[in-house]
Image 1 (cartoon, each protein chain N blue to C red):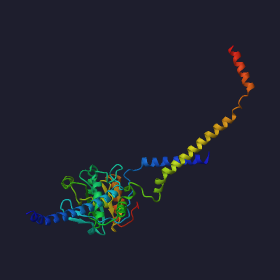
Image 2 (image 1 turned 180 degrees about the horizontal axis):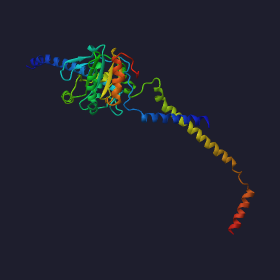
Image 3 (image 1 turned 60 degrees about the vertical axis):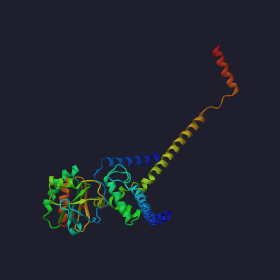
Image 4 (image 1 turned 45 degrees about the vertical axis):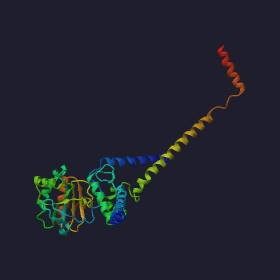
Length: 161
Length: 184
């Protein structure tokens, strides 16, 4: 009886394992696409939002852009091709991080150049102060000798008396 | 004055000029990369009839595209002018005008057209693909495509006042008469 039950169940178990493995494969594939969508969507600006990517934004346009990214990925386009498409439609503004080319280098290098210039300015100013302070110290008369000290002390004592 | 003092003053003056330009610039003047490029093909259902409209069949014509939505207040401001543009140029065999209904509900779009009237066709942009293809930021936005299918004009905002006159007199009229636009 037990043996018959196991034999009857085997085809069902096989069918279940095949279906579940297919489902798992589809889910993994879907997850991979969704990860790619997220990576691309994080780099594209929602054009009607305040400095938000289309991944973070809940706007309808951002939702449609995400759907378009997924559609293009499923068609076999690479992330670079998809970014290039959005760039061709909206220009540099669509990219959250400006491209490292042409005048955009000013944006990338600007903060570091300003930091270096500020550091140089600070260094020169502080050096100037230190040099002036040193020069002032040199103007100080030499330390008094014992004879002079004794004379000063004597005069102070005489005043106290 | 030391050289580095001069450089510092120059850099600060440059930054202030940039800030000044940013403060007083026209926020609607978003630079578009589409001017002078081939216009993407449009295909979609007409709002009222459901019949598929494709710009393929308008090859060789000047096309005025207007992106609008029923929830957009500025679209109502320019609506009369849109009707006037079509009344004025529709007799010209080379002129076509199309509305693109942007992020809207079908019922609301239909109601809008019934209330405000329309004398040209409107395509529903169901998945937003048309708007993204045209790099649309919001509504209203208007494009003019020439006989060769090249985008010649884009404006973000309502077509009223000087913008309306500029569009009709210096863009559409010269294009339809096949003479160079004074602004180009």
